[in-house]
Image 1 (cartoon, one colour):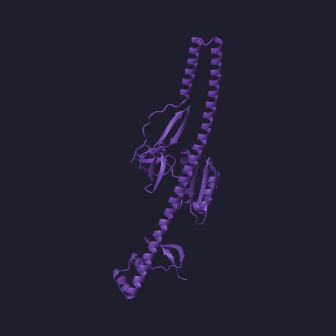
Image 2 (tube, rainbow, N blue to C red):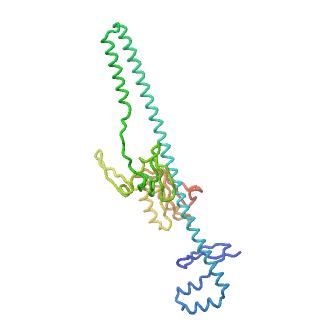
Image 3 (cartoon, helix red, strand yellow):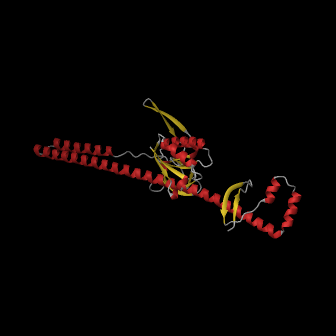
Length: 319
C-alpha cells in the first residue's frame, strides 16, 4: 500500500508522522531552492520531468495542503465543541441549583403563610367571642375592625417591594457572562422571562437571563478588592473559560499554567473545568494528574470521556 511522511507545508520541515494510503510529494525543488540551488538549474530540472509529472506533483501537494487545513479545522472544531459542552453543563448545574433554592424558598413561604393564617383565624375567633360577650358594642366592633386592618398591613409587609430596575444591558451591547469565557452581542430585547438572545463568540445563539450579563466594556478585566469584617476578600470579575490548553508546553510551564488557572476558576465559582493536555506520549497527562491530585482547590479529577476528548483531557472538580 502506498504511504508517505507528512511535511509541514509552511516550513517544509518533516513532522515524522506517517500517513498510510496517501501518496506524498518529495518537495525536492522547494527544498533545493531553500538551500540555495540556482533557479536556473531548478527550472531545467522541472523541464526534464515533463508536464505530466509536474502536474501530478502539484496535485499531490495541493491535496496535502487541503488535508492539513482540514485537520487543523477539525482540531479547532473539537476544542470549540468541548468548550460549548462545558458551557451547557455549567448552565444546567446553575439551573438545577436555582430550582432547588426556589423549592426551598417556596416551602418556607408556605410555612409562613400557614402560620399567619392560623394566627389570623385565632385572632378572628377571639374578636367574635368579645363581640358576643359585649353585646356587639360600638367599641368592640371598632377594635375588631382595627385588629383586622392591622393583620392586613402585616400581610402587605410580607410581600416584596417591587422596584423598577434599569436594564444592565441593551440590544446591541457587547456583554460578558459571569463564569463563562468569551464575549457575546445582545441581539434581542428581553422576553417575558427576562431572557435575551445573545450571539456568543460570533458562533452560537444562547438564551440568557439579562441579570446574569454585564457590559463587556465596563466589566471585563477588572479585579476588585473588598474589605469586610476585618478581612480582605478578592473578587475576580474577569470571565474565566471552562478549559485551559497545555498542548505544546513543557512540564514546568504546564504546572504553572494549571496552578494559575485553577486559582482563577475557583475565585469565579466554576465547579468543573477541563485541562487539555493531548495524548502524545502521556507525559503531560501524568504531570497534570500528579499535580491536581495534591492541589488544595481540587476535590477530584478524572480522565475525559470519549465525547470530552478521552485521554487527551483531564476533568477537574473544584471544591
